[in-house]
Amino acid sequence: MKKILQDLNFSEVEQLVLASGEKKFRARQLFEGLTAGRKISEISSLPRAFKDKLLEEYEDEPVKIKEIFRSADGTEKYLFSLADGSLVEGVLMKYKYGCTQCVSTQVGCRMGCNFCASTLGGLVRNLTAGEILAQILAVNALHEGDEALKGRGREARTVTNIVLMGSGEPLDNYGETVKFLRLVTAGDGLNVSARNISLSTCGLVPKMYELANEGIPLNLTVSLHATSDEERERVMPVAKAYKIEQILRACAYYFERTGRRYYFEYTLIEGENCDEAHARALVSLLKGRPCHVNLIRLNEVKERSLKATGEKEAYRFLGLLEKGGLSATLRRQIGSDIGGACGQLRASYLERAGDGQD
Ligand code: SAH
Image 1 (cartoon, rainbow, N blue to C red):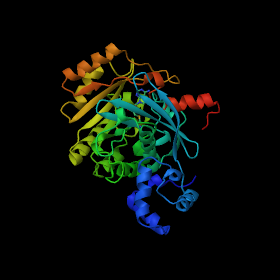
Image 2: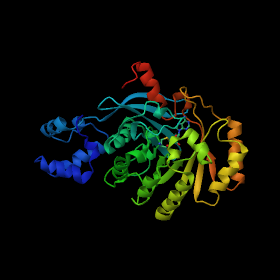
Image 3: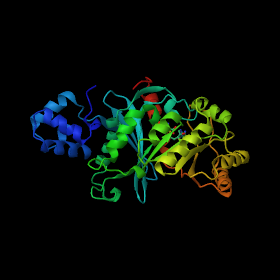
Image 4: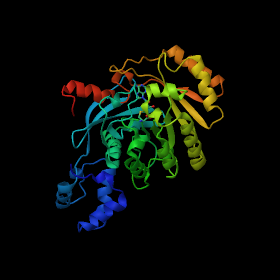
């Protein structure tokens, strides 16, 4: 695989340009072209010879949109292919305030949560920072002329909010994920506010402390899904390594360092984690903490036997949390008609492709 230019920040691009014997102003043209989602070969302001030289070493289009699925509610789901043929997926959710893109940080995942399709084939490889970024560049470019989807601000790009909730465990690919966060928030890059970025982790405690110390004020989200360590171990193998108590301490540290409240994802799984006793246990775990709980009804994965909770029961569970004094919402289920859950699209593509490989 060739190298990826989107891995570089502006000053690194500038060094590259100077080292290639080009004039300094070419760096701005190159970086702006990449930030606008152009392929190297398509950046019309650059001389042909320079582009050809770059293309000997760098991928022209490190992330391609291979397929687009459009949901009746407007949600778009993408299957992206990477330069080595690996597949990852992403989602674009349209809201009144702008568009949120869900990005992937790894091909596959090794965390093994038993309700999640991303883990079905284990971890294939980590994405580089530039490959994470290029998922967003590709979606902005796709919607470039689309007035209705323009975000606010000078650049008026489509993607205004980002969630790191696609395939992979972002904190298991820590270095590249943090590099991505620095690239995407850079004032001379896409300039997305860290406050509009949510990073979801299954609870890799030591990395949560490291992230708190990076000084990036994003929304930290932890996938909890259970109220006791024993029950959590049944659905998330990572719970054997890190206890809920340790997670809560790391979250408190995150708040102390960043002043940002934190979030919990709680997927409602029929017969597993959503009766009245669970609601009470969740209230006693989280009451008084500066946090918010996002409930999600399980998106059933056909390779797994777990069942979703009914809508009525989900609202009842939400009511119990609110009565107990927690701040909580039940996520609208969007895009479920197009395999909205983590890893479902890639899994079904690999199945259709028939060889189980990319
Ligand atoms: N590895 C990270 C981020 C990827 S998963 C994490 O564990 O948080 C993003 C969110 O989607 C997590 O809360 C995860 O538990 C949830 N999720 C995965 N599969 C799901 C499914 N089939 N139905 C509902 N939520 C699911």
